[in-house]
Length: 307
View 1 (cartoon, rainbow, N blue to C red):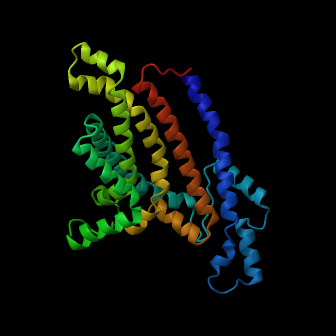
View 2: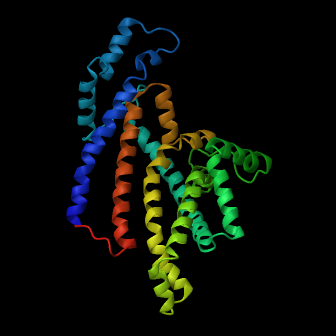
View 3: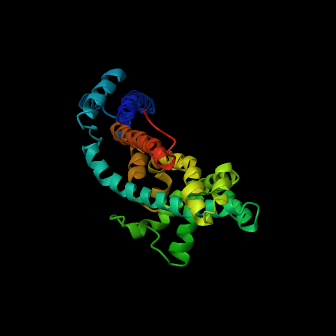
């Protein structure tokens, strides 16, 4: 197990370098960030040259990237164009988005897996058909439509919750945004769990367990559920990074100043350091989540061993 973890960690290095290089090149071809600092008017040539030298934009792109990566490995993600350290922006944004993502993941696990197990065990029955139709509707409707509808109904029309989230972003305020963020993924988890449960319920090991006289609940918990959750765990693990990076729409709707908000502002203002810095951390989150998922396979299925 130890050698496997070390090997995976070493494999993460070229993936991280490649991903950051790609996003660095993409951000640098978006446009001239110095022009965005001057607003509608054209920058004075002397001022533009001074700003380029100050932020290192007068160097070749490859040299900018090498300098950036050298600073990243020392914990320095650069400085935004407003003079604020990117690490300070991360310290304000990531705790908010992490709480929002945790709420979304809880919805996925509790509601998605529960509905998937119920429908998988009752395949072809009315409850199965109803849930399949509901999840199809959720997948078909864009997230911004779902978010705006819930905000309008629950926040303004029925006044059940506050339509916007305060700067503190308490957990109780993140329930509705978390549900909106998790809605599409929750539907996929439900359908994936349902398919996996329905397929494994007809397997030989399930019939053998029943023939031994084990109770239905024990067969489901100890045998059927553990084997059926492997593809679900894979999806949820890869979805963690996607939820954190894809929270832009949800955070904009509910006025949450998290990672999505900072990425939106960075792209809008062509702030290279902010965008690349936040995406670099999201890449690390995605890689670590995938490693944890692979290790969790051995817990769910004792037949899996890592050398």
